[in-house]
Amino acid sequence: MKKFAALLAAASILAGGSAYASGGGHWTYSGNTGPDHWATLDSKFSACAGMNQSPINIDTKTAIEAQLDAVKINYTSSSTEVLNNGHAIQVNFAKGSTITIDNTEFELKQYHLHYPSENTINGESFPMELHLVHADKNGNLAVIGIMFKEGAANSQLAAVWKKMPRKEGEKNALSGDLKATGVLPDSKDYYRFNGSLTTPPCSEGVRWIVMKNPITASKDQIKEFEHTMHHPTNRPVQPVNARPILK
Image 1 (cartoon, rainbow, N blue to C red):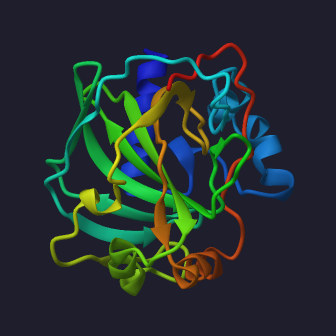
Image 2: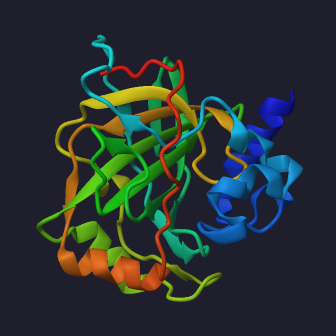
């Protein structure tokens, strides 16, 4: 029950974008409140010292070949708002968009961006990483990670960036028909592993799907995001330990 409650609370927080997880203490990406100290900042953050933490480095040479079923993606609802929660730029979505994994339906709550990427592939870090966060009816979470590389401008980012709040705690409404399909790569091949939230409370039991192929953002779009956040927003990679990574 404790695990369920933690995951359900985390899903609610992610949907709302609070900078304080589960009513816990303030945390940052550096210094005495940075990632090395998260587990000790608040008792609610104890999972940050767990054995199945995210992000990780995906080593494609040691990843296990598997017959991975295609993720059934049904993104039909539009975004409602974009907010700056001090840790990420987050886009919230109306109800109705879902994915299906392991015969379980997960509803899309939001996506948010980190720079540089949190997960790495064969030790390579990417300029940005986008996380699409989903929750099932029991509060269990599934996250799709998508890497950005520098290249052509991304049209969905262009629309979001026009409304991107520059100050922590601010949010702006998003109008128009902006759906999450606009940030998906053409190929839906992916790596899969079990992990956690990459921010406090670092709840474990999260199904992670990391797309193999990146999408692009322009140099200016990447720089604008960096300028808005003022500092890197990535948790360092965590030990894989005994977890299998499937490809």
